Image 1 (cartoon, helix red, strand yellow):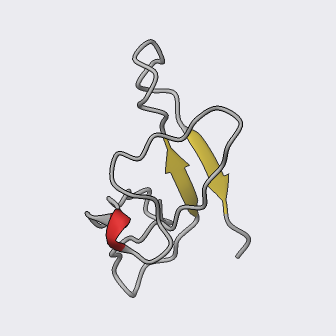
Image 2 (cartoon, one colour):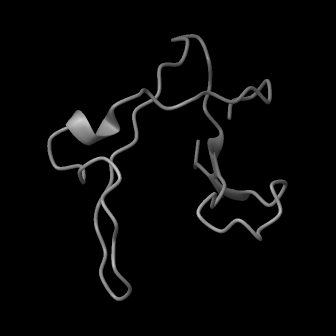
Image 3 (tube, one colour):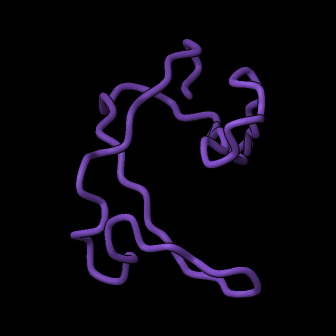
Length: 72
């Protein structure tokens, strides 16, 4: 999200980036994997943070966002 409260979608096919897990790769409990997210944003924008939802849990409310604010 940016200073104008706009959100941007990640670029499709992130699994094609070197080092990212395969598409639909299931991560088992107790393991971890690094993931790089890439977004196309206007060069004039100031990014404030990153917001995400866990859509893997069908019982979780869709308005439940986790945000990470960036230090500017």
